Length: 342
Image 1: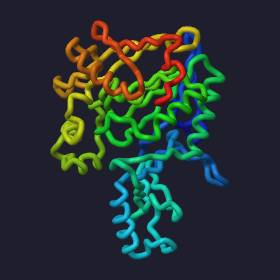
Image 2: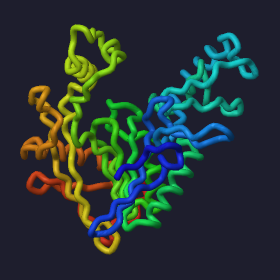
Image 3: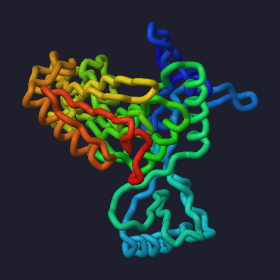
Image 4: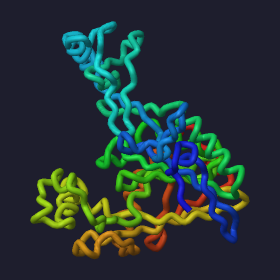
């Protein structure tokens, strides 16, 4: 059973179901990180639907200090055809990221060459989820829960980048809305790194579970990948292309560390989460990397301590017991219904 892709957008967004002895499980999958033509589309007139994935499009803004925004406004006004009322370049679209059109009434936002900048206290990135996509996703979650005993929602999300262990600014409110719509668990994946865990209304939110396995054996590799990493398909091998790719951003052992989360529900509320640290053979030779194994006690402790730190901003306390992380909820815990800081 899989979800998140289909012959058109309606199929890609629909919940899929797995029958088990404990009940029916629904799965709704989506992605905020995807290539431009990967998004599924609905039919329109004579045009059929387009096969693809269930996308949540994000409008990205680059956050800069207010004084920098004024400099960018001056640059914008100096560019030909870029002044308000002139013919500006079309918004840039890269994968899931679409730049928000400029609002001439908003003094805290400037668009320069298709890139949106807004004022803020700290430089970084900000994202706004497309309201139409959000509405479609929430309806599919609601439908999935109506026809199942347990509903899981997964989101393939790289924002703001694989380097970040912090969640993008749109995601917490989106995950909360998904739980409110009926999801029993929200699972993020994509950045190849662990991110924090939040308990909201008695439901777990995993902002990223990193890699369960690491598929380095994705042969054959296309000619464009050989070119991208300066390799020659007449001389070099697929493995050497993959090794070159790993060396440019995935050579840190942290990408080979994760957890397996086991949840226990009582009376339709999360009672306990057990977090089993795993490692994917970072120190093994290329042919043997990527397969999950339970981490050694010292490595497990290191993984769980990092996860403790990442989860603390969400008010989540993780105990470490015999190299296993444990989150226990009490019926009167603020985690059951969300705290005021969320």
